[in-house]
Amino acid sequence: VQLQASGGGLVQAGDSLRLSCAASGRTVSSYNMGWFRQAPGKQREFVAAISWSGGSTYYADSAKGRFTISRDNAKNTVYLQVNSLKPEDTAVYYCAAARTIAVIIQANLHKRVDYWGQGTQVTVSS
Image 1 (cartoon, one colour):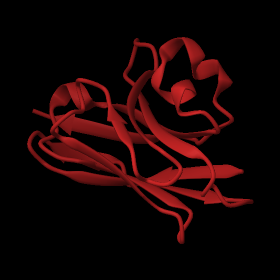
Image 2 (cartoon, helix red, strand yellow):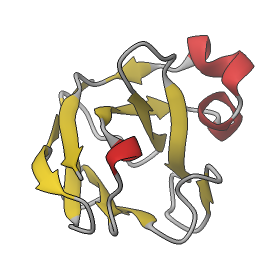
Image 3 (cartoon, one colour):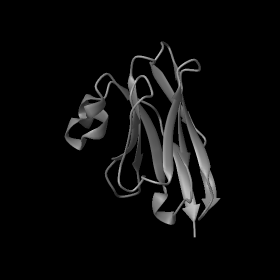
Image 4 (cartoon, helix red, strand yellow):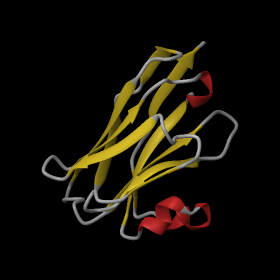
């Protein structure tokens, strides 16, 4: 599976973006999907996750209320809608796929993620 993230850019505080993660090589409809981010000088952190069916979603505290994860299995694509962006949201955003959703949510299990995408840069100016 290859995961291609896109949609990042340079925006102003308060703006919105929709990040996309398109999968190729095989369907990811049976995988749980997630978004992570890594800011300069910091460790990669969990942002949001969605179950394979789309029926359950999970968010980091920093993302609750402003970020929305969704998926379209027919398009083999996962999205992250990010609203009311803040300068502290500046980071490289990565998507990932895992057979077990705990692997995405729990930091101590991240090394078990099945597939990682390349990142897309989000830069928020104040």
